[in-house]
Image (cartoon, rainbow, N blue to C red):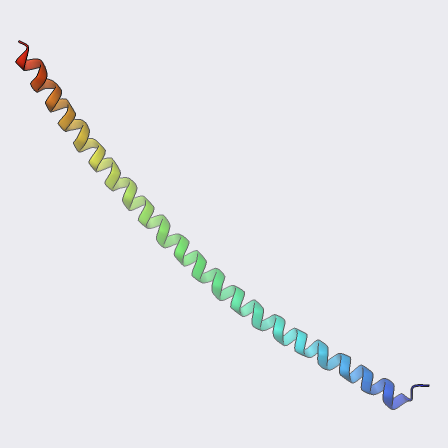
Length: 80
């Protein structure tokens, strides 16, 4: 038969486990929040880089189209 002191010790043990669980959960939450912040920052950086690359692609595309048009005109002139 468990004495009052045994019951109290068991309760104390469970409370200590709960406290450790809460501490660990808080640390994990802080780590997760830091990782989330870093991931969001990286996503924002990658979105800016993607937009820059899209603009650059459009510039190159326009230049190529212009060169193709000039070559096409040059080819038409030689047949005249």
